[in-house]
Image 1 (cartoon, rainbow, N blue to C red):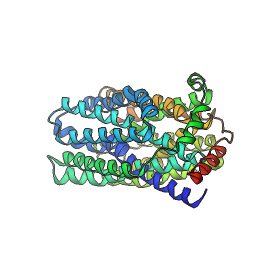
Image 2: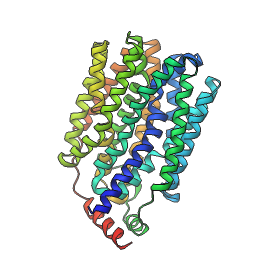
Image 3: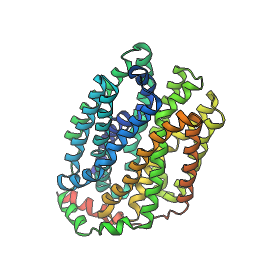
Image 4: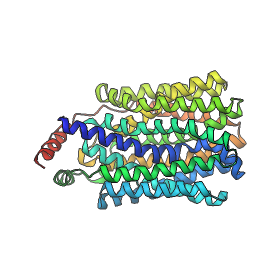
Length: 410
């Protein structure tokens, strides 16, 4: 990779990281940190809280296919800019929401904005750097960890200092961040060269063949399981800790530690998997994730939650990277965006199911332990599926060579 290409990779990956901070961490994952303060401010139950998380997932799932169609017509860049704008509007609405019913609308808007941003963003990055899928996806998704770190520090502080409006201030800060990232993305991110895009389109495969691809389907099922468990953990872990007697300060610190470790999880596991293979990396990370999710079920103490956070944050963001890369490993470069969109549909369905089911388990069937036990069991199923994943043949390097030639000539 030439020096100019190396600089482009880091510039795009860092911009993708900042975008992910807003559209994943702030718009989706921070909800669990804000929930204890927001729940009190809006006077909502855990069932209603779970439904809010499901509403966001419904917005994501309901517009995911349309977002993919729009991206193919508009191009990834314009679709990403639209998505960030929608997310920022949702965050602004949550800052001033007067009631639970308005909150449902704004949470739905967050899901819509995420669908128009995340998949086109990852597809655009992979189109630029197909030979470095694991690394570039890992760097971009590490923004989730950075955002969790920021949320873990900012939200509990504001919620403690400003007991009535602290959660509103948190959403307001996230909205301001959305405006900044929107401007940055507009200035930096470009679509891949048109001549290369036309070459890829000419070589594309029938969508039906991709949908029937055994390895892509397995990746989709694993991604769906990750969608269920990740959102359950992110929404309810803060409330679980507080309900178990953990202080607000310590719980916030553990969320911050989660964010710090998650920053490195994606790039590290992505790089490892580029070298040793997706299958081995998936088996290791899923095994550790099953263990980490089961720890607070057995030991809901400061030690148990600390072990849970350390193990989970070291693997879960890496799981995102591994399964996203794995979904594109077994198709031609021209088919990577479609394959990724397809498995993301499974992920979105998982996110739709997870929060509502967890809210029901918590309210009516054993509390937080039952929700985390359920997550442990289905993650074990994901581990079984990971054993069936095959390592890909080398197919990205020829496209990277074409990319370099195209950029040199332009």
